[in-house]
Length: 143
Image 1 (tube, one colour):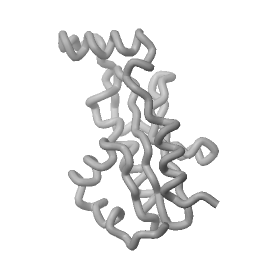
Image 2 (cartoon, helix red, strand yellow; image 1 turned 120 degrees about the horizontal axis):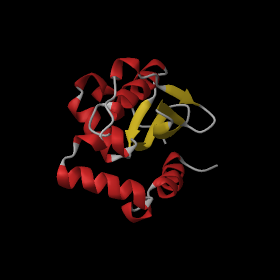
Image 3 (cartoon, helix red, strand yellow; image 1 turned 90 degrees about the vertical axis):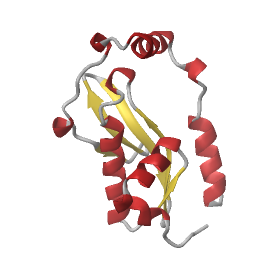
C-alpha cells in the first residue's frame, strides 16, 4: 500500500500542468482581460446562488456556472484531506468562486475531523488568511 505522501506525489503530478497546456481561447481571453481590464470578459457571479457539490467519484468539490466547471481536486484517507488543485473558469476568476469552493471543502474536512494538507498554493494562502481553518492543518500528523 502506498503511503499518503506517495499518493500525494502521484495525484499532484497528474494534476499540475503548465499554463501552456491551456486551450488557446482560454489563454487569450484571460490575457486580454488582464492586459486591457475589459469588463465584458468577466461574467458576474452571484455567490449566494452558488451550490458547491462534492463529487465523491471524482474526488472533487464542484460548482457549475453557465455550463462551466470550477472545482477543487482532493484525495483523502482516514485522517488526511489533501487539496491538490483549485481551478476556476477564467471568466469567473476574482469574484470569490474559489473561496466558496474552499469553504465547502474545509467545512467537510472539519466535520469529518480530517487533517488538511494544502498542496495547492491558493489553498495554503486561503487557509492562512482565514484563521477559522488554521487548526485543520495543525492536527497530529499521520502517515
